[in-house]
Image 1 (cartoon, protein in one colour):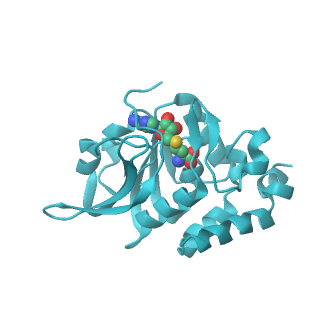
Image 2 (image 1 turned 60 degrees about the vertical axis):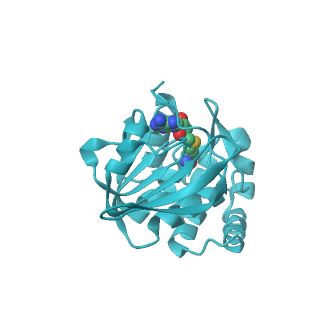
Length: 220
Ligand code: SAH
């Protein structure tokens, strides 16, 4: 029964997922490992059962608490941008949400640390990843703008909510050569940005316009 739930039928079947993968390819995603994760992670278990039939549409969907599961294209784009340039050992994710992005990324890196400020979302994400047999993730309930000092420095940081400016702690916790992917700016004017830490400076590349929920302070 559990296996059937993960495999999906009808609108959540392998064929429906293949169509999503083809669509992402057409939009320029070409990292095969990333596309493979999009094909294999059952996105329908991360949303409400009532929304399951829409899980393989390329759109954001509500997950409660005023938050959304990220659009598959954005998850793929951010993951690809993070991985470009070589394998990553120690990665920090801010904004676990329902855990979908976490599930896509985890097997592609050695250790993944993920921080979420809304406790019930984090609890559910933890359960789902367990159900999927993903084991290299550590979860933390907290304010991700402070990073996760105990496990720093990171060779990759992925932020799934938009601050106005990059939190200082995240820049500090990035290794030399490490990459930080972050949506930056106020609602309606956000850009996805990749920072790469060099010895003496930060390199900055813009990866295009995006729409994310804001990065908030504190926890609930
Ligand atoms: N990638 C996620 C969706 C993220 S939505 C997925 O696949 O489901 C953005 C998430 O960032 C929300 O869950 C929100 O609660 C969280 N968030 C916002 N500000 C935060 C902060 N300062 N620290 C940790 N999480 C934060």
